[in-house]
Image 1 (cartoon, rainbow, N blue to C red):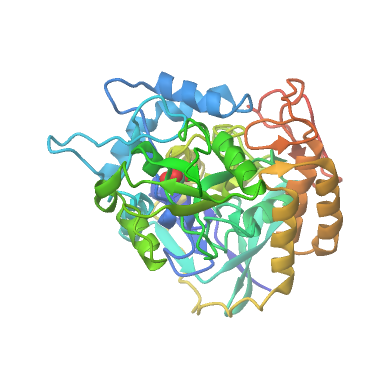
Image 2: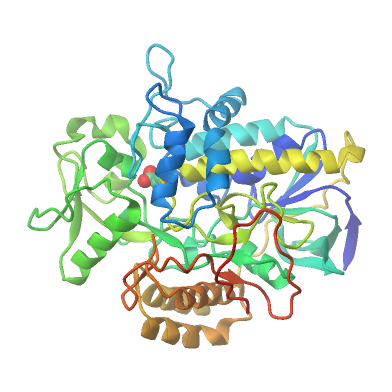
Length: 510
Ligand code: SIN
């Protein structure tokens, strides 16, 4: 296999977290590899919610931290929460500084939206419900004008190379054949796992590939069972499902069944609470709708142009019609266990964004905290590595090999089976019998990334014999305060405790 000696950080993934890391690394050279074309297949592009930040006069990072901890249901790392929420206003400033056009009032102050479980209006949007697309536009423009950043599109990361317990390289699949990059630092910024579920609001390419790479290389994964189901995915038979932002409920819309009966009193309760109420309504044979006819009513089109478009494509006008919705896999709180610099338990391997478990989200992510985390932690990781690679300041990377789009992955009938299996067994409501049957059905697919990640998720869900946040076990309906994190690591790996991790009372090493 051809080897290229890089001696600079390699970032896997070109969404908000990956590109923020790359920008912050400057003037240290770095290589960003992405499986598609730059700007494609990233969840950032689809994010409708905004960036949560305590920028209002009635707000403070302390109140933001309290809301985050309350939503996280006892599983957050309070120190990570405090540190990340404290950086909210600075993250907004940084994003504005690289050209993000945030929505502002006539007096120039930021507009602030409300989402579930936030006690203050603190969601900062850009272009209404197209925040993610605007953030992505800004970081791509900045990355393109930063000479230290090189992007190789159409490269799929296939293996992390480890020698004597530390990362020494990354293997790629490219149209020119397999390649091995020699480097001491790889940053996974590869996104989430929603594509593993039959109902998801994520790009279908988000199937936990970064988690599979990290696990196979020996890094520890934390709280893999913690999947957030968004209560209002537009249920019109499209895969993946268009999202109807929680901000719509923030503007007064309510959740009802076909008879107009409220699904729950408080449509802005924490996401897990709303998803469970809705799931029970669906299981009882009802349909669930978002009713935005009165509020935001005629304002809907102006406030939510993207959702208006998606609804119109399905023949619906949210200011006049009930909008059919259902819960769908939306965000993975679990991930690669990392410290405050984004480093995993495998020296040299870092993770930022959704693939990482920083301790911010706990058992239930507070809405719009993930774009905040992507920026804050991407900047921290970039700046920590900048110092480590100072000897490379200003160096140029080798010219990219001539790369073409990768051949489409062969149609994969296994994937449909994996998606149906994990959806049936590890959805909004879980139990031992269903999880055990899920594990048995997934066992034949362990050699595939999707099969492995789904299996790890179900393993952790079976292990966690309690209900907490987004993880609901019908056979263990109460929280058990003796249980903290689930940890999964490849059998036979030496223990590599993380410097700043919380005390782990329950350690499900496998
Ligand atoms: C939404 O707009 O409802 C999604 C925001 C988020 O998931 O953070």
